[in-house]
Every structure is written in C-alpha cells, then in structure tokens.
Image 1 (cartoon, rainbow, N blue to C red):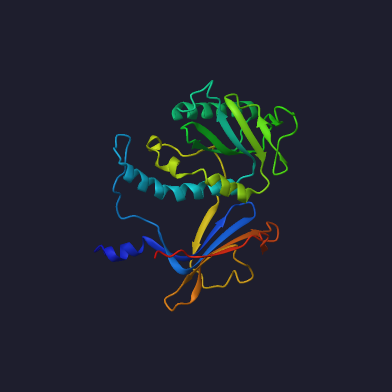
Image 2: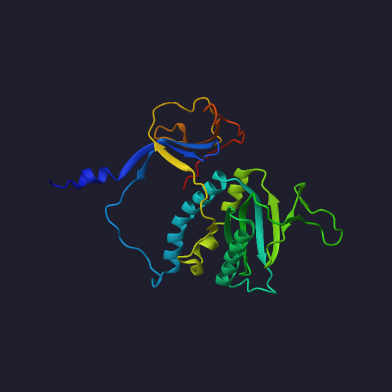
Length: 289
C-alpha cells in the first residue's frame, strides 16, 4: 500500500466550533466559536525534549513555560470546579524556624505535612500552589477538601475579637506546624478557582529554579472534568445568554461574537439544562495597531 502523506495529515486534526466541559457535579461550561477551530489529535514525529542535563536560555525558558501556563491554569481550574473543596488556605513558613528562601526545603516540608495530614485524618483532597514573594521567600496557596482538621477561629492579637474578612470569619489551621496560616471557607467555587489560577504567575513559570519541576501539588484521585469537542450546526444554545463574550469584526466589517462562554447547570435527575449564573461580560477584541 502506498503511503499518502496528505491523507495522513488530515487524520491529525479535527475541526470544531464548540468545546463542552462537564465537571461531573452538575456544572457545564460551553465555549462557542464563530470561526471553526482546529484541534490537533496526533503527531507525525516526536522531536524529543529536554532532560535534566539540558541547558536552557532565559528566552527559551520563558517561551516554553508561557505555553505551559494556560494548560496548567486550565487543569487547576478543572480540579477546583470538579471536586468539593471547602477551604482556601495560605500556608506560610516561619523564617525563624525554617529556610523559607530554599524552595526544595520548603517543598519537602509541605509534602511532609501532606503525609502527616493523611496519616492523621485519612485521605483528603488538596491542590496547592507555591508562590515566590518579592523577597524570594516561598509560601503556599491551596484548596483543601472537607475533613476534620483542626481549624480554629482567628482573633486579633490585641483585642482578641474575631478576625473577619468581608464580614466572614478567618480561621487558622493548627495542624500546620511550620509557621502561620490564613484560611477561609469557600462560598463561591468558581471565583475561588479563578483566584487560585492567578498564582500561576510569570515568576513561577519562568523561574529557572522551577525548570522541570511541578508548579502545583495535588492529592491522588481528584476528579477531572471531561472535555468534548464538537462541530455542530444546531442552535442548541439559543435559550441561553453568554456569560462571557468577545466581539470582533468580520471581513465585511460586521460585528460578530467571535467567542462565547456559557456557564450552565444540569439537573442530574431530570437532565434539564438551565442557567443560574447571571454574571455577564462582553468585551471588544483587542487589535494590534
């Protein structure tokens, strides 16, 4: 059989105009595109990759990690929305007792603590992201699941009155034995997910100390959303309003909704899809002039 390279190329890509993300807990997010998108589903050849002996320039590292940034943010957001996290936490190392400027040592303490919590309380869900302070010190932000850890209400040192933020109680996690904590109960999982991804910063992604190292840590067995790409002519979203949209101009000078995102929910008993989220934002596409 003669190998037809052009036919083979065609099998490597798929066209779609809708991306459907199902989080498994009733939440659905559908992104539509006015211009069909192309998704790569295969690769002709593998060009190899970097290894731990590889040398990498600042420019190459920045470009490489910039491409990873969106992928990592999308994965973290997926974990945050597909799992039942209860707490948003910030874990800080006490510099008088620990070398918070040493990332490897700080990471070891974090993972040691995760093992301790699992051994003490049993399996628990978590996703944690390191952040480098301007001083170079490392601390951690993350989400924790619902488990019987030792959360205590925080108070102001002088007055001993309850510490409130946006009229909500702030907590400390007494089980964190390496420094200080700041914990809040999650009231809006979507806003929390978006907030957490902001810690995937340019500094974190381009820091040469992070080359070939994890930018986040998560417990095993976290649920993942399912993603489906379809090319549909059906007007299956006519009864809903985009929660987010980008307006651009087509070749004829007409305004079009180039990209739209619908945040929907499904009744797991009846299968009925409805829209409860009433946050809407339509933006004009930025042009390079």
